[in-house]
Image (cartoon, rainbow, N blue to C red; front, side, top):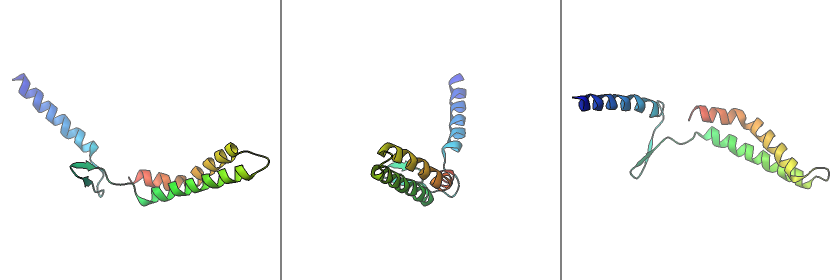
Length: 97
């Protein structure tokens, strides 16, 4: 009798847990063979990430060419400016994934 009640309790916990693990409405799941994976990241996230990467590379290039500063300083400034510039796009992409 106790085993049956334990199974019911366990099954109920799994259904509650599945509610939180399911993707939000409107997001499709895609199948990779027998593996079900969550929906892909939206395009706005990848645009923001590409923009941040480009600004980072510009900072690295500018720091390497400069006579008063170095590569590391240019990389740090480029990373900071890139993330600050692309932050709204990255945030929207993460919020809608």
